[in-house]
Image (cartoon, rainbow, N blue to C red; front, top):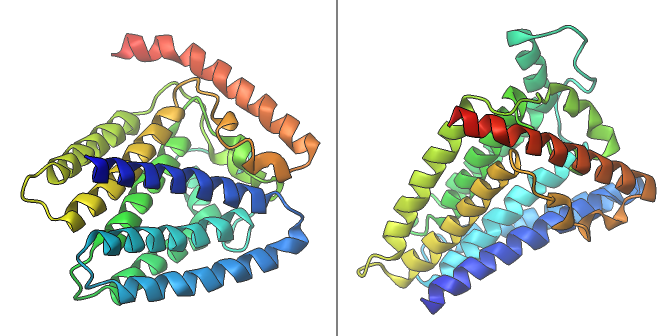
Length: 282
């Protein structure tokens, strides 16, 4: 049990710290972005090398290294997106009056290059770990990709909380493709399937015959999946998410912080109004 608790705690801390660090760097003046991306790219190369070096490591240490390296690869993509380095061919808000498939097509165009970069990163991870027995890195990146894609789809289809307070000024146009609704048909499907996957991971973790590698690796991935499910619930529940990463947002100007707090307050109020609707639906 101590090994499982250690893995859960490590994944939780890394998720919280990495997210806050990226938000902090994104809030610095734009002249610093090139240096942040340079450092992140060096870390990306080191992470890919680490994944290659540990592809045959079947101990708990190999699981931790592969998990951490996969998070670094994911973090590079998040930084490139939030800093506006890799987004999409469309960088303007949604035209007024547009709806349906045309609106969805424009939304895809706004993040197209980012999605391609994520797929390319996943392909690199599969390439450098091909033939190895340590699959924790690929599993970690796969969970991040699937759950983030699900979150983006839910934001587009409609939820009461948009987490728009985390968007920098140069990406504010993305808000025009968010939809404000108490619920959308995809949300319960996303959460249910993710919860079933989490249950399967739990079955592997508590299998008496599981190796230390499987226990540690699957516990790390399970913690990340549980956090991703929690982030999905943040989209519909009145939770003050802003407070979790207040330190990460401290690099932004006071005006942006006030704007973020106002946006978070409006989102929380909207979510509170949405809860009776969710109960009636259930």
